[in-house]
Image 1 (cartoon, helix red, strand yellow):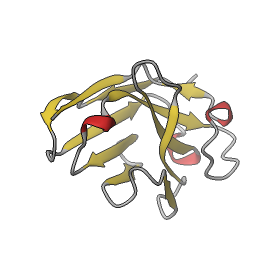
Image 2 (image 1 turned 180 degrees about the horizontal axis):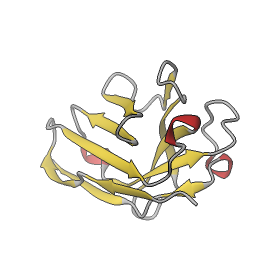
Image 3 (image 1 turned 90 degrees about the vertical axis):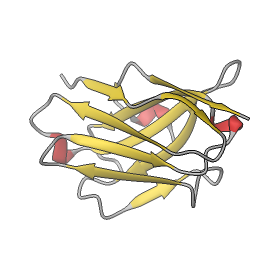
Length: 125
């Protein structure tokens, strides 16, 4: 069983930056692909970014590419999402997720096995 706990959300102004963290409790963290997703009020959950087990490969949604950076520290069992140039449309609850099967970087939420509880990010204009 893997437990994921996000932190780092908050209220910021447009153009500001935030770094989200997601700490995992399992001992096999380095064997998972990881992803970040978000759900805005009244909208479906959407993919944000993913990173491979080694951290070498990453993939981003077009809406965040160039502004967000996903990274991981396997020694600390933590994945990060650095968010720069935030926009009001980035307002959402952000979730990290682990793909135990490591089926390749995917945008499909159904491929991920474990999810955190989410952290709120609010960007004011």
